Length: 111
Image (cartoon, rainbow, N blue to C red; front, top):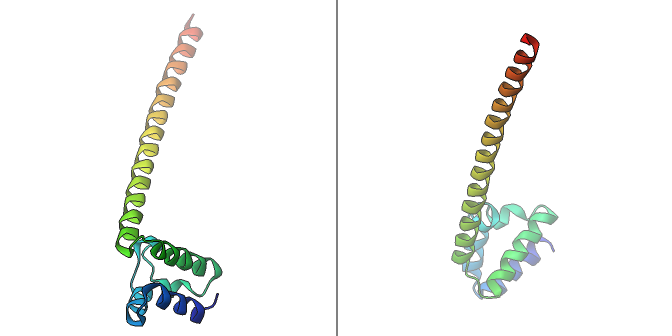
């Protein structure tokens, strides 16, 4: 779909031209903080906007979409933090293992 068709779809979904135009221009957390209109130059961006409109059409309000996107971002951040902690643990464990191996090697050389 092109920009005009997606704009027409937004007007249909919101049942109000001014509300649709405001939605198209406003940054949207469900679209990674991008305004829908800024995404319409690419096929993938247009698809994302159409999916957002479909969710609104199915009864998920734009505010709920923002809240869901924020919750997903927080969950992703927690996952990244957990992965970072696990990698730190592995690094520390590898250092301990290397020190033990070095110590064993030194003892075997002395004997």
